[in-house]
Image (tube, rainbow, N blue to C red):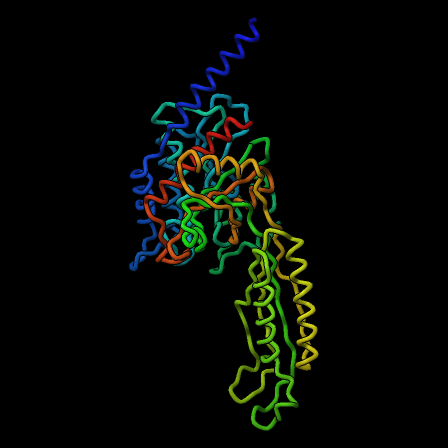
Length: 428
């Protein structure tokens, strides 16, 4: 009888908790004011934002975010990689936390939303809980990752995948990583101590603008991310024979640029085969690069991405077959050399379901889609279950001063984040 009564009591408590938490909504005006306020730091004359990692502007923005965290009585610390970690305590301190966050550094001419939106939405989730005097069973961590736009050293340190070579992280202006991390409260000598595990973090959810046109084109309010694509990058070299453009008959040429043009078309062809892959030649060098000389050498980049490593392997085999045929037909030599190999990071089905359930609860339309850009969540997937929520980007613009996601869309995404974190708290 006692066991039955206790079960009923616990069920009643859970039911009442569900009613309270399911009706929570974030303050959209406050969230969008935070976004606008942060965008003032590093503001450019034409409306963009420049907050390069470790710069004066980046440090000012980091200080503002930490100030907001402390106002919410969060425990704030900076790890050896310079990551800012704000912790809003839960009812049971021994349980692994649920984490969210992103980055606040930008490209040289960035927008208001990329990265910063995910951090500020995480803080808004905490504000709502704090002002309602509510705590989840688990702590919520809001993480500001260091230098996402360049080296991703912050999230890579948490995943334990930092390259053990300080020279690799030297900035373009020559500043060493020791100095950079010292500026933001980190310490290269102890960077291994930044590593985390599923013992610390039960799950990580990153809210981000899509940085692409899919949601807008489909008229969907939310993107439930299936995973972050694997990325392979190669250097393709075409070796022909340079010669006089006026005196060498067409049928006697070994024109490296003609062969390279066919390579570009071959890459485009495999990119357009059935599937979700993308394939791009985005960079090319031609030598001797003179108007009256037949090109004798061309080097170009290849970037190919998909959620399936096996599918990427299959596409690369097809491309190699194309390259062999082009080389024979153009009397050139073509080589394909790997420069980068990142494996896909897939989102666990239960996390996708939690995000989709949150959309349904909020009456928001959604679709499942991959993330074709890299994010800190890709590294977090190495240590814990990872999820991502996308909101639309107007015309797919990102990494530009024209980047725009409406206040309403920002509010919708933050509400999905709030309800998803609440669901995850009950999941474990």
